[in-house]
Length: 408
Ligand code: 5GP
Image 1 (cartoon, rainbow, N blue to C red):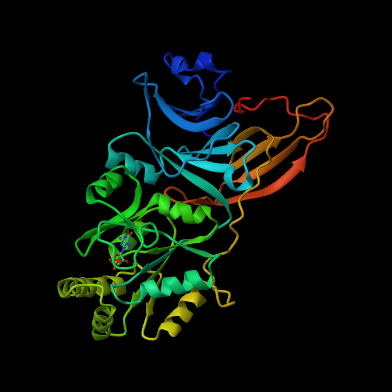
Image 2 (cartoon, rainbow, N blue to C red):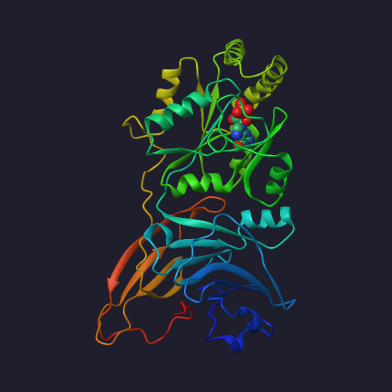
């Protein structure tokens, strides 16, 4: 077991530092990570617990409210918390639907460390747990006019229940027929700059003189709807995503020739001559980087649209072939609602469930294997595996009460 301890607040107030008690009221669990105690929970109405987070620093004796990244879990009736790998706290929500019961509060992962440096403040980040691999988001990059939009539209139209488009933010003006919230979130530069500083973006880049970016929320919204997210981003954005913990499958779309790209860009008729020239200049640099850097998993030439689309579908496993790069097992873990106690041992989280009512022999032990976790904030945490369940004999309950439980 790790060195860190998780406390059940009511039971262990006496061992918690002075100053913790007075402000910890209403919080549900406390998890010690080095010098810090993460108090999680809190009740707005005395019944439903929201999942807020405060940090008590033992060395300074002070409380800090951290910047919270990612979409936080919806309120619930209680939760269990257990520290994993000294960098994230597994939260099992009680009485939550299966797709919303397993969460991770990242407190010291590489992503959180990086954000702490950028934001120069305490940071925690939420990431929802999914069983198995889950669908990797699809990144599609390529120079302006190459036909990325057409390919994406075809994918989304042909497989509407499989794919969803991550709606980016941009400071550029809408074109005719472009709708706010559908094609882009058209945003003021000052607002977008503040949001990037506040860590709301997975990636952002200056492209053709404007700011473009993918918000964490845009990706999570698609994922939460059970769909595989498609990101249409430039090469700089693809590089940022590759450096992040978000695992994606990436495509770079090339034109058959530079002349053909120029022809298509002009035929589109959405840019002024000056803008066309700017986009063509950038296209040269993008083609060079996209083709040579090993940045992308796949490079496809869009000479003939149907051929290129066919290759894209094949790689995504949409043509019945086996090379899917993705298993469509997005089903979330089903943690039993009546989890009584939770503890971690050797990368296995043991969840004891059952009724405490006299005469009910319903105790059982679930094992959540967390040895192969992948991804994490700012995306989902994948690789969870619930693989063993067994019932305990009626009169053979454990005598050692687990050191962490949820409060009633
Ligand atoms: P457009 O103005 O033609 O819609 O897009 C211009 C370029 O910005 C395209 O190459 C597109 O892929 C890229 N882009 C669109 N959204 C994003 C985003 O969220 N992040 C980044 N990095 N690039 C984006």
